[in-house]
Amino acid sequence: MPIQPPVESPRDLGEAYALLAATHHRPIAGGTDVMVQITGEIGQLPDRLLDVWHLEGLRGITVSEGALTIGALTTYTAMRHSAPCREHAPALVEAAATIGAAQIQNRGTIGGNIANASPAGDTLPVLLAMDAEIVAGSLRGERIVAAADFWTGYRRTALAPDELVLRVRLPIAPDREVRFRKIGTRRAQAISKVVMALSWHLRDGRPEWRDVRVALGSVAERPIRVVATEALLEGAAPTAETAARAAEAVAGEIKPIDDVRSTADYRRAVTARVLQRMIREAGGW
Amino acid sequence: MLVNGDAVEVDVPGMRRLLDVLREDLGLSGTKEGCGEGECGACSVLLDGELVDACLVPICQVDGHVVRTVEGLAGRAVDGQPDLSQLDVVQSAFLETGGAQCGICTPGMLMAAHAFLASGADPTDEAIREAIAGNLCRCTGYTKIVDAIVLAAHSASQPPVE
Image (cartoon, rainbow over all chains, first blue to last red; front, side, top):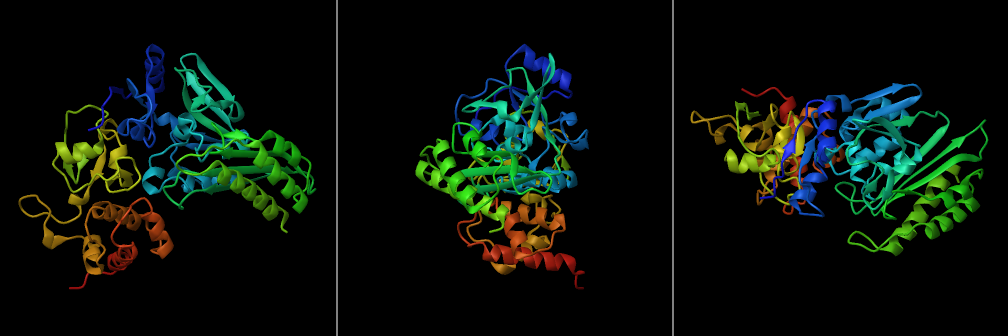
């Protein structure tokens, strides 16, 4: 029988904030990470938990003020079925569909993926590539953290201990293209060996890419953007020469490790190949 | 909570797994524990109609909700136990095609099949394989399970024969 630490189930956000301010609680949403950590006795076990599952205000998907806003408790299944997500964030929908299988997608949430801060979190490169803003809240109020500043180290985030992830805001940019690719052992129930999101803007019908983002998971201690590779792609057109240079650059820029799921060498090779292929597909050659 | 239509009350720690409440507190041992970490799907049940792994759900989140397990699929005999002469269409289809062998994955497979059929999706090979992708079987090679779900989909859409 796994340990059963004490848990509080607040019914509103104010109560949740007060509990977090009073003493440290590990938040639990759909439980797809936290329950595994408790049952498997992985890492430091939480002394007490804060069950946020019933905070209805953290559910839902809205479009307003030029952004798609997704509540932290929105499940992968809800994102897959959401017309606004499919329209404005198809790469995020694609990522959601690769996570676990039905059982996990029905329970796992985007807020949980963000706060759990796994370097292999499959939605996280998409959030980085889309310049997402993560809204955190506490008794002290709400604040916005750019996705690029959110994951600070191995399973570490910019959240203070009394803060909850409330929602994520994705700016809607009609001239932006976003691509997603996950490499795992099988199509379902696989933790990524490499996961990548690539985005760029097209201005005035010109072929040159602008505001290029190359974001990766499972190749460093946290989800990262590879800024040197991005700089190389900035202002370039998706030609064969560009793709070859970007592939070489990204292989040198990431710092993957050998672990149970893959090797550093494989991750480096496959990252280079996936980026090369995405650029080739975009270039239509 | 409601379990297979019965109102049930338990007094247990909030972080107790739904799986342990079902098997140990309620004696519903049809739901199996495989991996205990959301990989194998042996403990799949329906929570408010959605397929979930009961090993990943703390009971505090089930307060006031509706659970259906494999014991809730067949009709009931007068003593309240599942009546084996009243198997539901999915159970019958698994028997018909040989979709069950050792039986450990079967309760979870049946619940995944129910969730899939309830979704109203087209019973294509690809859609069925995605629907059971979270349920591991080490005996059948899946083909007969897919056949069973196709058969159940067709049986469910036909009016019963007198």
